[in-house]
Length: 400
Figure 1 (cartoon, helix red, strand yellow):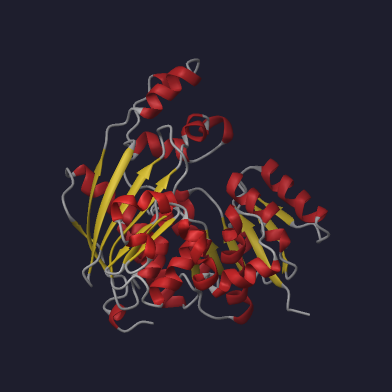
Figure 2 (tube, one colour):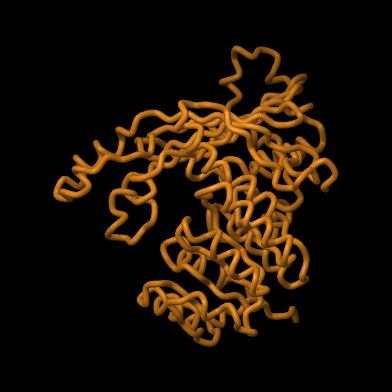
């Protein structure tokens, strides 16, 4: 029988509660001695779910400080609003607790340095719970890149293209943090879904690093129209001016010569897409048409007719499916964003259990999250290039 891991859940809004119900409670080796949220009703709902799963009913608190000194907590799952992520990570790391932190962007580069400095002082790991690294296609492409199928990678693209207008417009009613961010900030506010899989492919912080970025934003028109059509009785929002541009485009350069384009597009009508695109010297992958274009293959003989082969990624599953997903499919894919949430959660649990480093570490977390603050700066300066700090202090050249 595996050792039981004791995790606290802090932050029980839509993300935290969804993960608890669909992912966290599915793991037989994890107990939940305490739950925390500033809203009492959310704590009670979470405690009810945990008790219903057959586990002991957890204690409830509205103050995360109550958890810091608890000896019955090995680690913390942090699902709070973006603005609290780094401060809470730091406090829990100082208390000796492993932290699995949900995704979001940083509010300042200094915050990212504080996160790194805390790790280097305490050596307590913090893991960014970036699920998209564990997507089936993302991992298959990673496997192909590692085998050299696409040659040398030259350019990658990622996007968070997700119609969030309803979530933003009804942020007050649902006690959701996105609304205040969209009213007050103009930036690439959710970079890690886009950047995480790309950073893994390009070995950022492990033989490569991001050097600089430039960001530009369109005007903010989408939310204004949406509120006028769907929430005209909200006088406050009807008169509000949104700072967040509808489409934010960020171009990043890397030390080894690659370029990366990130696109945030969340306040216009559109289909969901992470826009994952990888271009190498021997071929390319494109998420939006589920296709591979590989030099020397039959489908590449007439590149003007490639549309006939859209969707051909399925033809390459048997040969290039990532071993992690081969095993996962055999065992049965769990719920949570097509199974990604389960895989990233299991990685965190194993790190806590074995007291080892986490696969998405503090240097990754700082480098990916700082894109938000730097893009905000670049946009404010009309797209001026901004340097991306080296949070490894030169260690990227030899880290594995």
